[in-house]
Image (tube, rainbow, N blue to C red; front, top):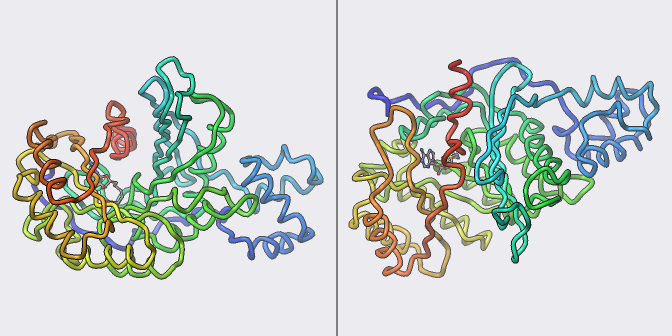
Length: 385
Ligand code: SAH
């Protein structure tokens, strides 16, 4: 943890905008973009097929398009957005973190996790599921002191297509069968990589629409399989409540009391625990989707038994009809951090207290820990090289 707190940053520093890409376009904008290039409108459908169903980004291989048009399409609508830098894997290859370079040299990462694969790489008895953790910003302006990304500050927002293409790339990797467990599909997308999705609301929402629209308009992943995680930008949670997209909302609470949350999640100085929990409750009430409360257990900081009681009270003050679920995350210490994960007995007591109060609780598995999954550390170490 830094001794001097990082400032909160809402607006990304201005940088060159990423080039426009087909994946930035909603279905009703695609025909116009194609006719603008002097091509017949029906080509838009072919492009959707290639990108969203064929998961291909290389127009030079699209033989149903006249060769002369392929190059101009590449330039105008399919500029390369994500350049593979490297990946690291663990869990026998079932967890893979990929580092991508964007057009301006900015680095972001995404993590693909495969569940239900046996040690020998064959599918387990209950089938195989896959989750991709995506980045919505390069860096993050929310300055949470325990998070590696938060300590690096905000570089810029990702465009819709830069988000969608992380998902397309994962779908392509799964379809090709290069992961243990054999060829498969992507079931879940979680906005828990780098960045605060609600601080890049417009692009994130459009990317969710592209990810969840049925193929070939989009990637065809169920909205119920998509989770948007936020530090608690209350007006954006309220906006999401009105969108009519049944994604799962996750709120990174990490403390039930304002005094501690002000330091762990600095946005709390603007929207307090009660306001965030109220907004989360209204989200659940309107969408009928159970909200997930994220709580990183940090030794001797937020893991006291009384805080578990307090957390249960804060959540149950809104009703006990099963609107909420607590996801405890053992802290993944960042380099140089003075904080570490809770003792096993404190974690167990925290769980026991929540259960005693009737609050559904799970402890997140520590998938990807060896590769610093989802904590911005790969991108951080790369840029320090
Ligand atoms: N900005 C969003 C999404 C990205 S982080 C948010 O904060 O919700 C995804 C989750 O990982 C958040 O709950 C975040 O608090 C948590 N996280 C970040 N750094 C962590 C660490 N070092 N150990 C455990 N969880 C961490």
